[in-house]
Length: 438
Image 1 (cartoon, rainbow, N blue to C red):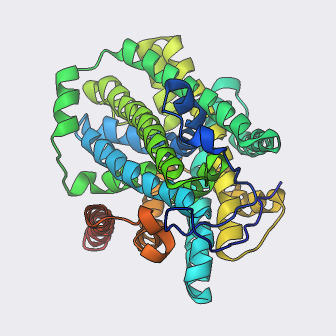
Image 2: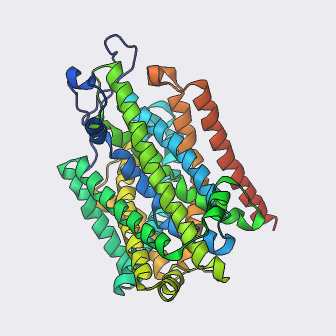
């Protein structure tokens, strides 16, 4: 069930100087449909790709960093989630725009435009990111199985990997089936945290204040960078440019612009749902643990403590949300792995082999019995260091007029994109400095 390879054909649209590439899975929408006014029903037809992507922004890595942030620093780091979400909206929109404008995903563009050495480097970084992502996803799923059913963590991780494989198998019947399954799991996560918020009764004025008022010190820097790494995810920056092609319409410039507009709506809705869920994690942790002077650095302890403090319903909701997050994000990680492997180096492996490559390190680490939250936070910090390898190629390619045509980045978008990239690099440098300089 590998992803179809693309054959690039340079051509021009009638009445529009746009380079377009034929894609094996890109349907041609009739002209009459492409010029129809945008309605709610038409909008719903284009919703979905960003919801698959958004799962990566509320994966188990977020549970680890957000629980730590709330328990140790109260509501003080909610602003990091807000600004990370703003960064994510811009980057995912650029990735979607690349796929809509050209019919090729970001890794394939890298293979065609950059040197072989550069592509092997980018592929290597992407594989490291995939391993760090898989560690968080499998650890979260295994903890969910353990907390709810008492299944040992190693077997829970293997079970998570197997179940995510079967969820992805739904793509045999169309991408929309996967989108529906993922959206259902996202709904479960959201519902669980609505229940948690209702039970913990946070201090809402403080929540609003720290959402809008940035504050950071050397003690919270490591967790803040981890929150950034958990929120802006490199593998879905690569994936989004592939997902939008299932709805790509090449009949006219107007149709492509409408598709981009509708995908922007898709991104804004999905990413803001992810923001609310991530903020809810910090709020629940702060209202439950920090308010009682409890420094919680373990998901098991968080679950065990929630139950007596807030009732059995709270503990069950937490476990269900963690399991749904592990299953859904593991599926998306596997999907991204196919795009990355085939795009950068044009290597097509069986899905089980790709899954084995990224799962093995995670299973080994889980079997060592290390502190789950510490492992999760560290994995998200590692992801933050791999972000530039996704963002820099995205900005370089979407700023090329010869590739993007009418959809090339304007000056304001380019400046904003490079500013975000510079901020991420600066945070990583500050983290390294604070770590090695003590």
